[in-house]
Amino acid sequence: MIQGGAGGVGLSAVQIAKAFGAHVATTASENHREMLEQLGADEVIDYHQTSPAEVLHDYDAVFDTVGDIETGLKVLKADGQLATIAGQPTPEQQHDQQKKVAFQFTNGSSADLTALADLVTSGKIKLTLDVHDFTVENVIAAHETIEAHHTTGKIVIHVTD
Image 1 (cartoon, rainbow, N blue to C red):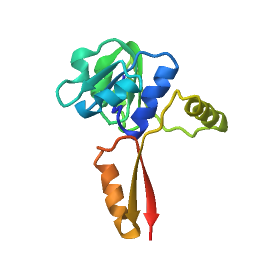
Image 2 (image 1 turned 90 degrees about the vertical axis):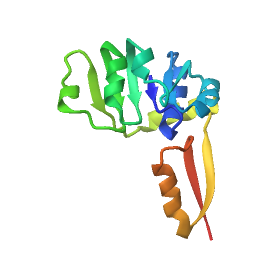
Image 3 (image 1 turned 180 degrees about the vertical axis):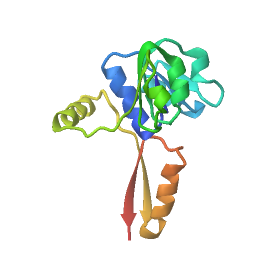
Image 4 (image 1 turned 180 degrees about the horizontal axis):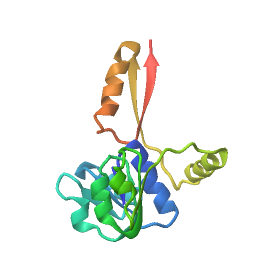
């Protein structure tokens, strides 16, 4: 399961997981369902309506991009693994005897980046960009857009004069 499948990291994570043959469930707003299904998501749970823990069980892995570690843990099977990039696991969560929980920060190697580039050039990953032109005075507005967590994919800021 990928929590936050329509975000900048989530969109790539859904596609990478599918490229490696995983069954992928993800959380997103209903308005992102069709796009995520087209990108390969097998299940899209509208987190506004349903908690993933109500409908998903015994997953091998959870990738958390939204900071909802507790829900992710409820979805995992006993020997499952959760990696989060958005929250800090509590000591209790990190020392669970059955489930592995970790904050993930990755410094990609050139081999990692080459492998990702190959997935993009082969068409297994489609890049989703939301391009806006911002003046220098409006860069704060661009950052506020990102902070609102309601963008799709990555935002590219082209600063114009």
